[in-house]
Length: 522
Image (cartoon, rainbow, N blue to C red; front, side, top):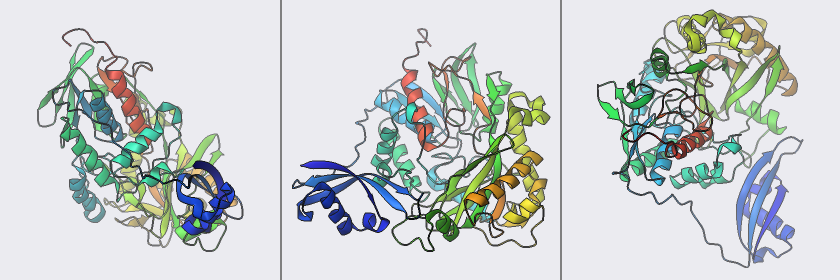
């Protein structure tokens, strides 16, 4: 017999199989020896009270054998002779669009400007150690997109956009831990994602799809209002009347190309701020209300938001036990972001703290038209580079010094590998961002006792929170409003935010592609 139970237990009970078995057997009204197996279906941590609790949904096998089941991948057909669809970008939107196309019998042809996951490592090391930025291979560009080497969080609120469980099961089928199917806030980790991404690529190739690296798209081949294909940097041409544009939120050259070619895009407001680093032990004490986290709880995360002067100020991409990373995509700019390994074992915690911007904030760059938010973003990144002396050493301040307007006389060591340099961050960030952050830090300290401390380090800027443009598409067909056969997709097109929502959007676009009727001969 099988029975499902909802339990709330202490962390040490959830973490010790024998204790959990006794608790479950008591709740099920059976003897412990009758419980043949416990399958955890859902797990979440409730740290709202003085005592941390773990909420579990379990399936109990009572006097019944348990047969382990692994997530199964679809039975992909060989699509080498199928109709081709060009996919620009091998991030989550592009890769999951490709997998779905294969299921439907279409042949994906992926064009990725960067390198494969293994080759990317050398270029990421060059940023960290030598301060050299490769415009096509970095934390943002390359196989797997920005998520591959920047954490792998899988939590999304986009439940209505598609089958989130299906995305998680596919990732588990390609090698992710089955825990992602259980945890309320699933996370893969930067150390695990490259192998999963490589497995997806090999699956695509094994079933007749194509993946081309170092193939930056430089032009769209148009016939009136229809797309016929694309040209890449080395001059090669790829032809198809269906093109998925899934280039990611930092593909500035593609945004400029679209604007230059008169392909409709619009300005999309974004949020910009800083990346803050604390000791993980401090965040644990604040969130778990205890001196020591102990072995049964993961490193604590936080999620905070405040309204300051009519603007949202909120945490973004919080990384417990993580590292701050240099995520510039061109020489002459500084961008910070964060990541954690699967174990989240580092001694520091970091998070973006960003300020919501409004369309009127970009007025100084209005001459750029729909690229005004991108120009605003880029100006901040270039200013950071200049103030850092032309290196990737991020401008930084201690938190209280920043709020009180003092340049920090000393800076503690941080996880940001290229190093940090003491700067008045209000020389990097526009006034509206600085004043909003200063007030928000005071507010955060009132609700998270200990958060507002001069031991915390503020790094600037955190500027790549989302795409600065939206590539306009029809809400029903998902096809571009102007160019037939062009399907904007994912985070870079302005329709997703994170790995899972981008993957969901990729699947939706793949499903719609075959439903759009095009004239014979197209």
